[in-house]
Length: 259
Image (cartoon, rainbow, N blue to C red; front, side, top):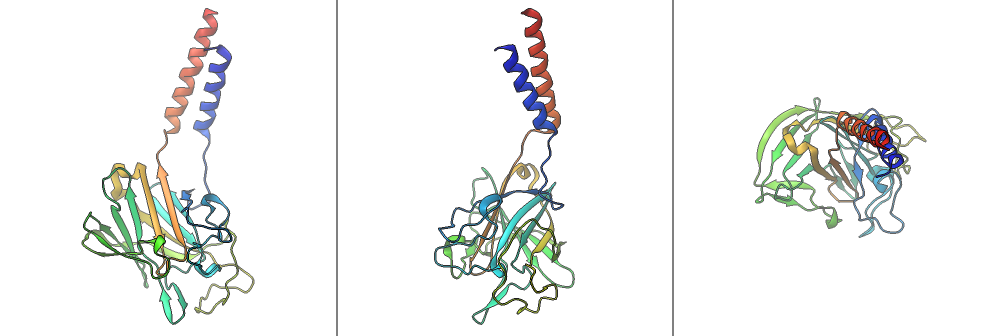
């Protein structure tokens, strides 16, 4: 290998080791494309999720139904959306509420390994459900391709009554369509002319153990109007990358001395 090439590789690797990427204070944006958007329903931003809804069958495109992003800060998971996670959306005499947050640990041998069930109240609590290959699921009412919505049967509780937070988020970095019927749900946060973004935060994924290095998440509302997917794959720690860079630099210097 020529000396100049080795030096260039070492420099690039060392730079990669000192760079950090943070979408906002919620942590790293791990949103990925769900692959279901069609012409007229596709969005923008990471994963193409901002302003995207599923397009088969036709879905409602408004901020009320829009899910935006999944974030990871260490082991803490968060989600952002125009969708009001606590009450859901009232439409056609039906409340379309939040589903469970499904978690798939890659190479585990089953479709879904865990689910987080949010219980909203004066103190917001969540349960962690331990799933198996016998677990059954509830399919969304309108857009089946967004399945699953909630866990139905054959699961056990890994933990219960864990605390999470729900609220309004400002400067989320997401755009959004204005609601077709703003404020109809009695939302005290809504201000005319401003798009709504809500956040659920504080889901500790420490229970994944080594699985926290390679997993995906799945969330939708009762109708399946929008699907939000996150994916996390561990990368080498900055220290390891720097050591690799230093090693390549040393190799380049050794080649130079022999030249």
